[in-house]
Length: 296
Image 1 (tube, rainbow, N blue to C red):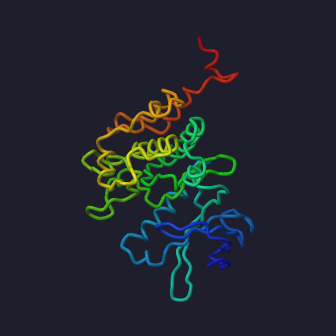
Image 2: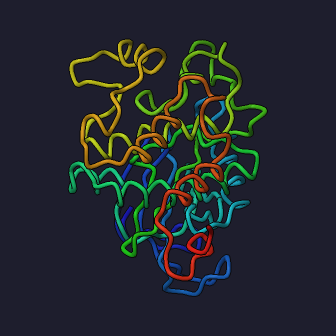
Image 3: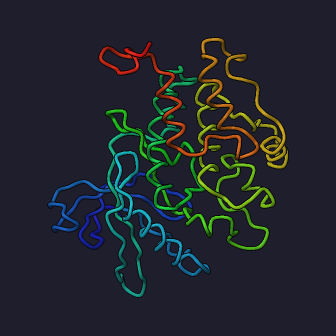
């Protein structure tokens, strides 16, 4: 489809493909959504076969509606959702902010285990994005390194709200006995509904998984030889070894942040993304002019 014009956008290059569709870098060819011609955007084209699946249409509409409500530097902006007819087919597309950079997964693959300073930066940035998402009464439910973009100027942005749901609906499964989300990046309550309906603390647990994996270079609950059943058992019952025990370069304070995020009982986690940001801020050494530097 490279070179095709989809609504007001011309597809320039394929950026990647996922469960819901293929994402292209595109350029605006006629003014739209306050954007001038030539502006770079990202356009997700829904896989045609998915349109026949029950509930898919509602899901992509929900992604567009949620995304358009959120405007924050740490969340990839949704510009619009529309459909066009091409021959006998209908193409649904979602236009989004184009971020010049790479996914956190690609960055992790390139860096290997990351130092504490980088982990802290990612934690603050992602927490700020989650705070904006949760403020809309929404749980992301599919946070993972592949759904975090790191821009060339080091801004981390949460993307892909395809599985996001309102808190009141987030505990509902897509079908009886069906898991919704990414098995390796899920909170205990996503596997065992008896632990309670999902809220933003499920996303915070997954942020803990991501930070642990960044720091150690290995997933805290999954081993390559494991089946998913063993991984789920560890998520539900086994805390991973403390970061500071595995690598003494990590401070006890940051280790405690990650352990709090990874608490099995959600009431033992940070109560909100803002509480996590506050905890990270309190741990930073005061800078000149910082009010904390003047406290007795």
